[in-house]
Amino acid sequence: MEIQPVSDEFGAIVKDVDLANLSGDDFVHIEKAWWKYAVLLFPNQHLTTEEHLSFSNRFGRLECGLRRSTTPSIGRIANIDKDGNLLPIDHLGRRFSIGNSVWHSDSSYKCVGAKASLLLAQVVPEKGGETEWADMRAAHDQLPQSMKDWLQNKTAVHNYSFSHAWHGGLEMLSEEDRKDLPPVEHPLIKVHPDSNRKVLFVGRHASHIIGEDFFGSRKLLRRLTQDATISENTWRHKWQVDDLVIWDNRCVLHRARWFPADQPRAMVRSTVAGDGDNPWAVAN
Ligand code: OGA
Ligand code: MN
Image 1 (cartoon, rainbow, N blue to C red):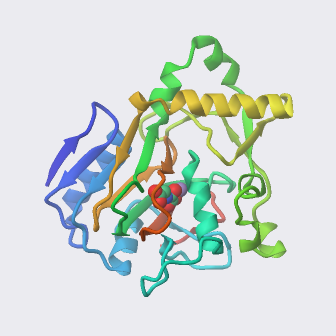
Image 2 (image 1 turned 90 degrees about the vertical axis):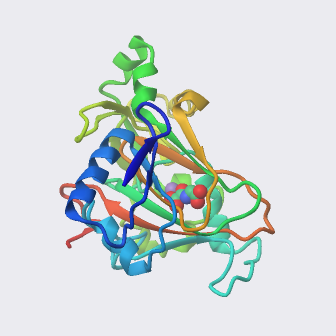
């Protein structure tokens, strides 16, 4: 196994490893590298759904999707059906994916956000369709001291209904299911449990800051995200089929990049639930 950093502390490529047949020692190395680099790319992984889920499970309990009643499974982010036919442009699944083009941390609209996401490329477009990740530890460290002080005890409201209202997704869930996704609160500055580094926690699901002017604080959240995601803090990856990437939602924002609407793209994703008392986590 070879671990090639893409920068000093953000992003690495792990080569010569088969995630379907991973020794305990190799997993320890991978987990350590993940704590350090936050985003790891594993090229050439030919994983079945079972193998994908079982590798994910080594990082923690899996998270159920949008409905609490479901069991954790692989989610498809695709503009084609299972036979490879392009879905109509206004298909709900396609509209739902549009939201991914805005910087976010997966499931931050849940009371406990996702720990890790593991995205595997099955069909990739010729042009575009990259994913981009931003290091929110670096973003925190770069904030002016006065802003760090101001944010220190502030809390943001993250809200599924807010972030999904503009592109579609609300109709994905019944009223009953949406009751499980009320607005939730997350501190704007978090300490990462594995590295003890401070992190700026924002993203598209954050609607406003508690105790501050509603629209003024929304504007500030946008500006913080913009400043955090400057190119120095990001890694953009052009996918090849069978690339698997794991990222740490506790210290990374990500977004999908544009690609031509008539080019097929299909990704599958598993989600590791946030540790601790988490109603969205399913015991191993
Ligand atoms: C996701 C996501 C980005 C992409 O799966 O959570 O945001 O590039 N995907 O598909
Ligand atoms: Mn996402």
